[in-house]
Each structure stands twice: as C-alpha cells, then as structure tokens.
Length: 215
Image (tube, rainbow, N blue to C red):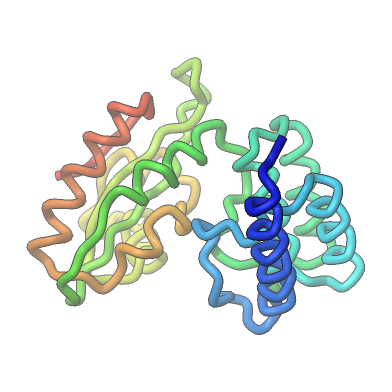
C-alpha cells in the first residue's frame, strides 16, 4: 500500500502533469521534452483518452506525448504502430520531430542511456542519432548511428543522404533522425561533443544496441 504522504505528492504531481498537457499544444516543437515524460504519472486509461482527444483535435504534440508514454511503458509494437498511423492520418502537420515514424524496441534504452550524458559547456556542436535499417541482414531490424556536427541533426542527416561527407551506413541504411534522446545534447562545445559522441556510442553498444559511428 502506498503511504498517505506519497499519495498526496502523487496527486500534486498529477495536477502538474495535467497542466503540462495543456501546455503541449503551444507549438510544434513543444517546450516539453519527451525525456521528461509529462504523462508518466497518469494511468494508462487516461493516457489513451488523451490520445483520442488529440486525434479529434488534430493535436500532434499531445498525441505524440501520449504515444511516447505508452511506448516507454512497453506497449506492444503492433499497438504503437497502429497509433502512429492514426496520428499521422489525423495530425500530420503538428507532429513534433522527436516522435519516430516506426516502432523501435530499444527506444526506451536509448533515452535512458543518453540521459546519463551532460555537457556544461555551450558551443556550436550537436550530438545526433540516426535510425538504421538492417531488416535485410540482422535479426534485430534496427541499428543506430551516433554522430556529432555543427549542423543541426536534420541538416546533417540530409547531407549524409546526399553523399556529403557521408557515413556509408547512413547513406545506405539511414531512415530518420532519432531526435528525442539527444535533445539535451545540442549546442555544446566541440570538445565535449567529441567525448560524448564516443562514450555514448560505447554505452549504447553496452546496452545491447547495434551501433555505427561514434568516432
């Protein structure tokens, strides 16, 4: 049984969560990072209700946070894929760029590992992850590329796909940028980015991911 004091704290936190839910719709980028998991204290039925509300309102941000929360709780892949399809049908113009377009089993691990890294020095470098498609050659269909660049992750991905200083794995197998896990590792110093790029790649490998890049 949860102690009374904890229930009170949870109640306050859930009220704050509901406030944050209303804040999600303010912009496509959304000020609330998915790593924060603003719906984490809500029961599943309330998360799914929010998702249905988001579909009716065409609210891609709220819908993305709802899917993300279920994803982080280990919802079945078939349910996540169905939810993604529905959200793209009803709210494609407002879906934030941190929501992947396909289900990835290890996404929660990627968030947990990336959260261990911080930089106190600001600069012009960005850490980025790219989802790689190995469905034709590996039992686990997806891998990840770890990189750093002074370009935004989206710009650097486009360069890779255009053959500009491109890593072969991204050129041939890159599907999309996994924006969410490294949102906190943008605009950092070059020295810190170089260190984090290498250490993050090793940490993701240690967590069981198939990793390219990281050097």
